[in-house]
Amino acid sequence: MDTVDLRSDTVTLPTDSMRQAILDAELGDDVFEEDPTINDLEAKAATVFGKEAALIVPSGTMANLVSVLAHCDRGTEVILGDKAHTYMYEAGGIAAFGGVHPRTPKNFDDGTIDLDEIRGAVRPDNVHFPQTALIGLENSHNVCYGSPLTKAYIDEVAAIGQEHGLPLHIDGARIFNAAVALETTVKDLTENVHSVSFCLSKGLSCPVGSVVCGSAKFIGKARRIRKGLGGGMRQAGILAAAGIIALDEMIERLKLDHSNARRLAEGIDAIDGLTVQMDLVKTNIVYAELEGGSKRPDEVVTAMKEKGVKFFAVGPARFRMVTNSGVGADGIDHALKELSSYFASA
Image (tube, rainbow, N blue to C red; front, side):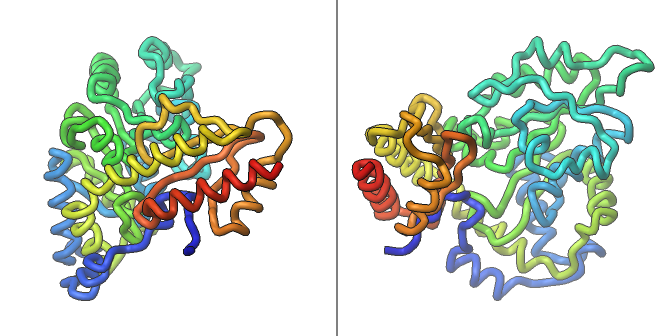
C-alpha cells in the first residue's frame, strides 16, 4: 500500500494532462507581460471570478500579502478573524513587510465572525487608533473545520464594508472547495468582494502558484507590489499551463475529496478513543479529537506514519486530516484500518 498522505492538499501532484501542458506551454517573459500562457491563465481566472483582471503569484501567502498591501497603507489596519490563515500562518508578513496592523475579532467554528463584532472593529476617526483600511475573510476556513462561507454571509460583510468605505478581500485558498460544497460558483460567492486569492497548488493539484483577482486598477498595483516582493517570474507559463488545466478539469472532482472526507470522518468517529464533530465536516478537512487522555497526539502521529498514514497533530488532543487527489477510496480504507487497529490495541 502506498503512503496515505493526509497532511494537506498541498502534497498533491500534477496530473498527466498538466504535465503534458507544461511540456507544450508557449513561453515568454512575464515581467514584461509577454508570457502568453500566463496571460491566458490570468484572463481565464478573471472570467471565472467575474473580475476585470488577475495576477499569478508563487504562493498563497504572497497572494494575501500582495492583496493586503495593495489595499492598505502603512500604519493602517485590517480586520481579520482570530483564526485567519493570514493572521496565524503567514509569518506576520502584513505587519513585518507592510506595516499593516491586524485587528482580530473571534472566528466561530463555522468560520464566520459576528457581524456586530466586525462593525465594532471599525475604528473611529481618532489619532489614537490606526485607520481601518480593509476587511478580510477566509473561504473555506482552514482552522475552522474547513467551513465554507455562504454568499449571504459574505454579502452582509461586504455591506458593512460599503457602509464604511472599506474593501473586502477573500483569502480563497480553497474557495473552489467552498463553492462545490455550497453547490454554487466562485463568481457568485465573490460577486460583491473587491479582491480574492485562490491556490492552484492545493485541491486543484498544480505544482506551484496562486492567483489574485480584482479590478484592473487593483491588479495593476498588485503587480508592482509583487515585483517589489521578488515575485516577478520570467518564463512561468510552465506553471500557468497547469493552472489552465486545473480550472478546466479539477474543480468538479473536488466533490470526491469531500465525499472521502465524510467517509473518513464517519470512520474515525466510530473508533473508541476518537471523535469528530460530524456537523462541521463540509469540505475536505477533517479535525479529530482524542478522548480519554490515554494517548498523546505525537505518539499517534508517529505510530500511524510507521503504518503509512500521515497527518498532523494540531493541538494537545487534536488532529487534522485533509483529503486530496492523491488519496482514493483505498487510501481512506487503509487509514481507517490502521487507526482502528491502533486504538483497539490500546
